[in-house]
Image 1 (cartoon, rainbow, N blue to C red):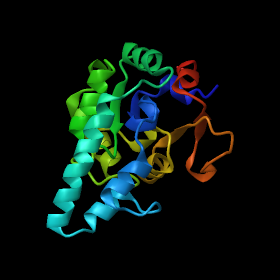
Image 2: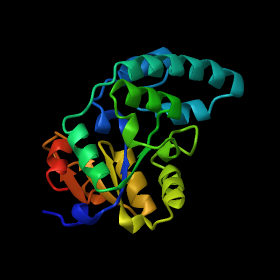
Image 3: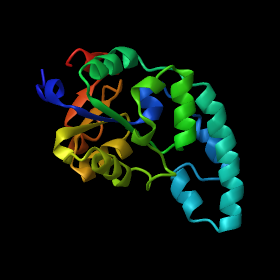
Image 4: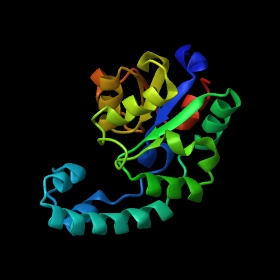
Length: 198
């Protein structure tokens, strides 16, 4: 049992696919925005002219609003966050979503009480993952070194950002293949499994 989790007081989470079950249909989003299957959506938007970017961003916002309302909690999320809250841990979110839609998802799931607004970092607050900018901002706000924190996520961008920032990384995945081992310090099948280690 990793003793790190028992003493760790600073927890950073991804939102979609980590605190929530995956609901985004990225294939549909890419088709709607005319983005190729292998192209990063946010990078595509960043590379566009301002007028085209605005139009596509408005459509992306419409889609993300829809998905935020469909949010479903990941197994173990309530027990994990409650345990961490009882231990007075600092909890934050760094997401490629916007802050507004992140807050909407948290509200839908009755998770808002666990996260201070200042500790929710979206793509409108920092450069999106895999850049560590959002994690760096959160750690600076808390005033702690990265080595005292853990980044919990389900995708390589979460792990890349955590590794670049200097955090411990915890990969939540039901995939039996060992994905991204060079980026992963700990691997669990669910937040429920992680909650048993707190």
